[in-house]
Image (cartoon, rainbow, N blue to C red; front, side, top):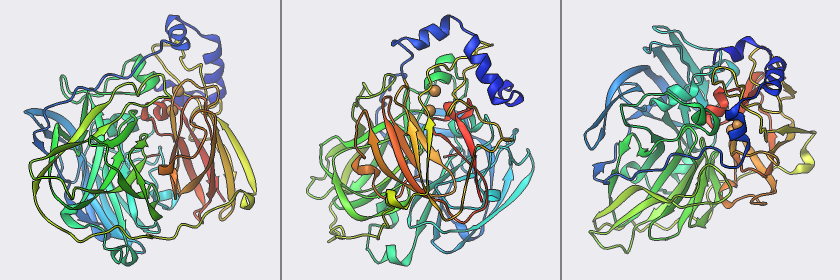
Length: 486
Ligand code: C2O
Ligand code: CU
Ligand code: CU
């Protein structure tokens, strides 16, 4: 795998084109690899809730630990702070300064990327900006983002998948006085839920095989906040659930087992201008949905589930529906809460503001190098090279970026660093912008056959950032490019 970094992109592409093997043929025909099936577990383990940390003056490390996931499953994992897996939920207000004295207590280089946050290039966890084992780094930046659900995870070149999979991830929640004035559920009624699939047989190890490197690493166990078979006791009132797909590759089509509708109040880049009533939300790795779920009217003793419904459009996953988290109604409580009619203004960008359009072919089909099990995932014909500058944009300008998966065979959730965008349109496949893709976004999913256009206004953050596929196996296998804001 280290080979990628030593070869210039063109040489790798040339190698890809000339080499072939039986596996390539397998991957090029329609019965390609499929995602490991989910196995549901008892739903009897109390859902873990990560500790809350004030972000104005934080101090933590990344370190190995022994995590008890529930049902007697204990694994070696990685965590932030004192957590044996995952990390604290950082809470901070828009406009405040975030400070973190970070120590790397892992046996390998790491860094922290603030997914969705508008931070200077030096603070963004660029793939080669790493802290060595035993080293420290002082992160610090003003929080510019709108109130909403962001997250943090490692981003070292070719090791993001491995480190995130073994447990490194946490929530970064931004609030403001305007948000508080909306009277949304808070405290124990505001529940962050990071959903991740893992392979637990033999411990939490990251040993992807060639199919995993091709379609992504899928596990049979779906954990929420690091808990297997989780249950959350709830009252008969409204909860704010912050859904984060923190999986390496699995897509979830979130719904309630009762089929009841819920209100979508926020997407990747924070609160929407108004709540949207939905009965399912499809989230790819990296995407978030902030929802209000009302358990009012359900009898004490009722069980219902957050589940993933089957969905169409991808050859490797979506055929199975499975339960994720059990809600157990344990008490009567009334909150006199009705969702606000309007939330927070969202300035809509329009195509006429764009000064440029850039097109990226993400629909590669030839991806296996044939050399020692190496799998490559190019982005627009290139694989990541930290020494290259692929795109140059101007701060403050608006551009349209097109991710074209028309000829692709895989799903690719495309993610831009340095800020938020809006989804302009989609052609092919699902053909329209989905309701849960409204507002500000930092990650957008393109199914095979789809072309998605986003519109972005580049922030005033001069420097080099990356954009990439958030299928973490794809990212680590090259599906990431640089762009510089000037
Ligand atoms: Cu969530 Cu570049 O990543
Ligand atoms: Cu690929
Ligand atoms: Cu991808």
